[in-house]
Image (cartoon, rainbow, N blue to C red; front, side, top):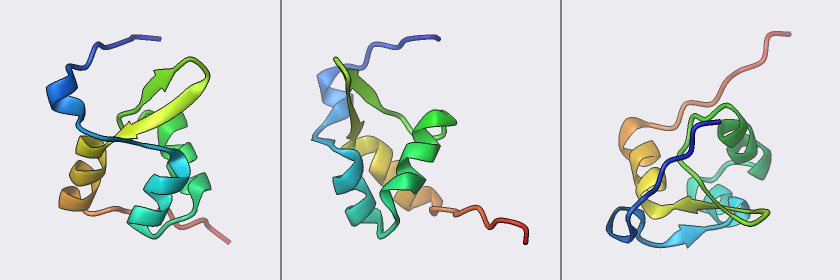
Length: 71
């Protein structure tokens, strides 16, 4: 796994998975899936995962696309 170092200026505030889900009006599992797929930037602090405000803004600007399952 490739690790990156993010500067404090680029991170801004950090949000939990649950807080991010509320801000984006999606389920926490959607945010967790995007983290597992590396489709959203995140920061690990020990065992905790936090999403930078810049990553949330990037999703909002680019439009949040939710995958639709085939039935």
